[in-house]
Amino acid sequence: MIQLEEKMYFYLLAIIPVMVLAFVFLQLWKRKTQNQFADARLLRKLAPDKSYFKSALKLMLLLLGLTFLVLGLVNPKIGTKLETVKREGVDIVFAVDVSKSMLAEDIAPNRLEKAKRLVSEIINQLASDRIGIIAYAGQAYPQLPITTDYGAAKMFLQSMNTNMLSSQGTAINAAIDLASTYYNDEEQTNRILFIVSDGEDHSERSTIDAVEYATQNGIRIFTIGVGKAKGAPIPIKRNGVVESLKKDNQGEVVITRLNETILSEIADEGNGEYIDGSNTEKAVEYIKEQLNQMDKKEFEAKQFAEYKDQFQWFLGIGLFFLFLDIFLLDRKTKWLKKLNLFNEHDDV
Image (cartoon, rainbow, N blue to C red):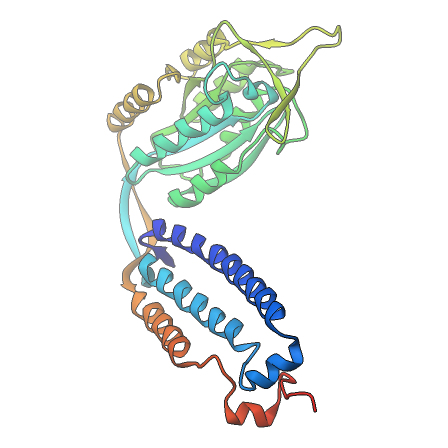
């Protein structure tokens, strides 16, 4: 298992393409200036030891050296031991609505991004709970099974979008049904399902039936509403630019609204609560308080321990490349002239 301690230093790698461009422009300027001074044959006679490839080789060594120095600053760490630890927590599943209505921008930047931020902030507040993620629209699909790997959860969460599911619509009952299969610990007394949605529901069968089945399996359902009751149109974008607005069969612009009534009804029937997600900080703080009040179940989890710094290897390699760059001469060397690997002999 590898950890990167200071990821911010990766931004320093942006200097590499700048240096490459500067090198290319410098070489073009040199060649243009030399051609104005004399022709190529005379230049070879005036500077017989001029090497045309070593400048590129020196640049490559310099860039390799800088790359490894940056990796040293990032300080990769390797977990050298896998051990079993005891943790306490509850099992939490997040069902995130990825239907097209979540593209409405009545809450900045749009409902889906707001939902993803809410879930991400909730995960940041967790200590040892297990979590899973479901994406749903017209159907529900598993994204991440129950796990303690919060890093993986955030990665899957950020990749979610409204194009990931071919079946459109909003079937909340499908999300609840799938969530009911997620909890794999029969002894877990607290099973929590968070439905993050604007409340639009196009389920073919009663959502309340799915809620009742979930509660029979010991699942408490909390709903988090994202959006505004006054509603907003659904933009259709290409390359980030709005081309049009979604319209119905009659050609009228579709206005999608936050349906707090349905979300509240689901939460009430699911022994949970409806939470207004418009204020991220307040919503996350309230959820944190609710989770802290719940009984925690002890379980075992494997995790890497005894992480050891590896920065010294990268710094050493980086300095080695810089050392080579400093002592590598721009002109031809005798042994290289004899090999003539790059066909650099003067014309007779």
